[in-house]
Each structure stands twice: as structure tokens, then as C-alpha cells.
Image: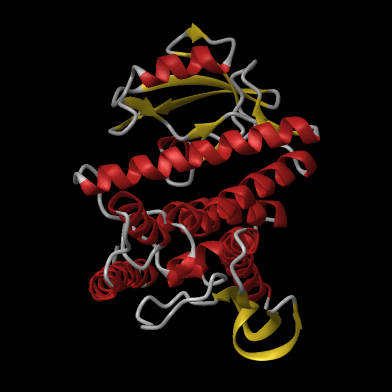
Length: 346
């Protein structure tokens, strides 16, 4: 039950905030919003105010809004309060505001976690082990959290930096490590594995850390920084996938649901932070220049601004069919990957 609620909460808040961005921008631009729904499907309850029907729908997965005159295939005279009657830059503003709200949500969630639960700050003053990665050389050799590394190959190490430098340059070489476990001195042999991505030797240990709570101002600044960092990391990964330098690893609804379930079990603060990461992913994905996504609409309206007239309805329809095909292909590929991981095939 907790898992189901976590998944519904995650998808609900991320999609709802996205649609809320479109809603606020449409209202500010003078566009009539006919419906704004929390959830999908049949209406459960609702009320009408200012020409908009606000409703709670049966399926609690995000939400949607319906603007007046948003269908380009309608061949009729348009009213001034309709979406497609707006100037090209206003339409871009309305469309762009959905992804922007996803980035704002990420900043708010990251900041909330940092101000209430805190930021993990590693203790690098000593060469103490905080965590040992499962299946790593350190675990296989018998190193445990709490062990203090005293020396490596008879060379005294005073802090984490001195210790890590030796390990990083000794990939695939046997190291004799002297540790202090409570009051007992123990000698352990470890062979660091060469990490292709980092180009260094690693044994799979993490420094101990403590949670440092930030004030509201500092947490907001850090929230913005982390949103930018995650955005750049995602864009870099997409670029590397496109040029074939990394494998195309995608997660579909099944995979994302599994991740949400796992993260939810580790604590509510971790779930909130993970929702922030998903929100960044959704914001960037929607800005891709694929017809039917927000990025595709921005592309159409930019064309309108340059040419002085909108792209023809027939061309828009063809582009959207192509865009839908691309999205479906991505979804099917991601779901295929999900099931491979689910059954341990990959």
C-alpha cells in the first residue's frame, strides 16, 4: 500500500505541477482555460469559477488542463481568448511554463530536504570508513564500516585524501592495509579495481558523513545549484547517448515505479529528493524538439515568429504523428529495458 501511494504521489505531484505551469501562464496571457483537473478520467467533484471548471478526477495521476481553441485542425474563426489566437511569443510563454514549473518544483523539493533533513557532509579529517559497497574489493577483503585505515603498504595515512590518493594510483595492485577496528589492529590485503569512467583505482568505500541542516536562504541557493547540476548531468548523458559513447539506458513507467518503491523504503526525505530528480528529467524531456512535446510546440511557434504565419494545420498534424511515433518508440524501448532488468536478463 505504501509503495502504491508513493508512486501515485510522485507521478501526481510532478505532472500536476507541470500542468499548473501551463495553467498560470495561460491565465496571465488572457487565455480561457475551460478545465483544470487534478487527476484523469471521470469527474468526481468540481466547481466552476471564472469560466474554468476545476475538478478532481478518478485516476490520481497528475492532472491536465484544456484551453479554449488549442486544436489547430478546427477550421473556423477564432476568438481573442483562445490559445491559438495569441501572439507567437505568448504561446511559447504558455508552453514553456510547464517545464519551467518542473524545475521550480525540483528547487523547492531539494531546498525542503536540505532545510529540514540537511545536506550530507563527509568527514575527511580521518581515514575512517563510513560505508562499504556491496560486492566491492573492500567488502570481499573484509573491511567494515567504522574501520580506521592507519597505513597502506607501511605508509602512514592521516586523512581521507592521503588514503584515497594511494588507492587511486594503485589499480590492480595488491595493497596491504593496516586498520584499527575498535581497539584491535588488523592487516588486510585489497586489490583496487580500475574504474574505466573515473580512470582510477577504487576499492568501494565511502567516507562517514553527518547531516548539516541549511537555513532557508542557503537551502534555496543550494536547491537551485542542484537543479542546474542535475540538468547538466542529464543533458550530458543524452548527448553521450546520441553519439553512442554510452549505452542507451532508459527507464519506462515500470522501471521508474520500481525505483520510487525502493527509494520510498529508505525514508520520506529521500523520496522527496528523488521526486525532484524526476521533475528535472520531465522538464528536460518535455523541452526536447519533438513534435507533440512542449519543445516541439515551441519549435512550431518559433517558426511562426520568423515566418510571420503559423505552420499549416496539415503539416502540424503530420509532424505530430511523427512525434507520437517517436515517443511511442522511446516508451516501448524503455519498457522493454524495464522488463529485462525486472527478470534479471540485463
